[in-house]
Length: 370
Image 1 (tube, rainbow, N blue to C red):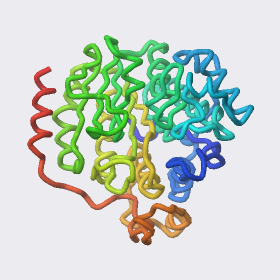
Image 2: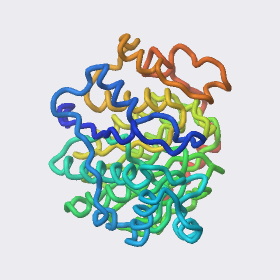
Image 3: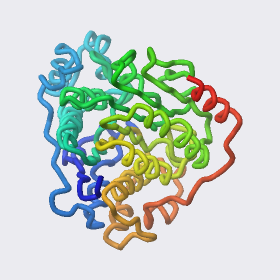
Image 4: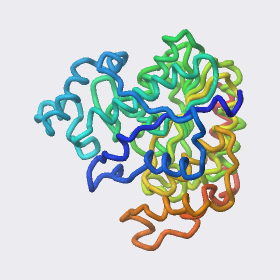
């Protein structure tokens, strides 16, 4: 697989939409990644692709028609009735109604389904707008309205590809994806997520009918521990299946600076995992996911794109890229303190190494015996 085969799918819908002024997803994410990559010259001709918006019929590959109609109606009317809120989880604190409540997730879904087509003959596609892994067929949940990882895997399957591997390194367990593929013989799920963290699923003993390897990890997960997980769980379980395609949900909320987890990875861990998985199958689709600090999200996903597309991560960003990061604002930045200088000037974090704790070693040993 060569770097020239890497493509990036983005959209301006992310720049012009927000879940609301109070929501963790009020921050700019994908748009900043697009701006940083352009500032670095990392979109040579043919690599940037504008995401289409998936049509309702495409979304009904997994979601129910009633739910998709309710989502469209919520956008058109700007509100939902109590019965719709109770039935479909729309209009809640986690999943509010906002002006692009259908268009934005439908664009993410369109992007990942296009990615499946683009990798049919091999290659890598990065879709940072994807990764919404908590939605269920007829219900929104956990900031997710449409489950685009499920739709990506189903699209790959419909193209005749299989077996498939889905790797999820978001701080939160991929409950919606596991629901979709529990018991599947042609899809393997590997999830590394923080223990005792919402949605409180993905226990070590949960194998989803043989389809899943779940590794809940304690708070404070460091780079050394994630590297052990990569080499002792993720890569061996991928290798034994010989997948025709891999989908990586590369959530950015497991890094130290994120407000919605207590894990302590550097963004180097995500780049390493993406690069290793690229060599494990002829096709790789890399999605976004969680991430609620605008600087850490932008730096992480831009760095992943750089690694996948054969770029060299600069020790210090050029002024035009630095300006993109200095223009960001976030009211939760370090409890009101000024962000550290390296959030503006670098893409790669300092490594966050440490010991491999006994509880992680024991859980890896348990999964190795399955």
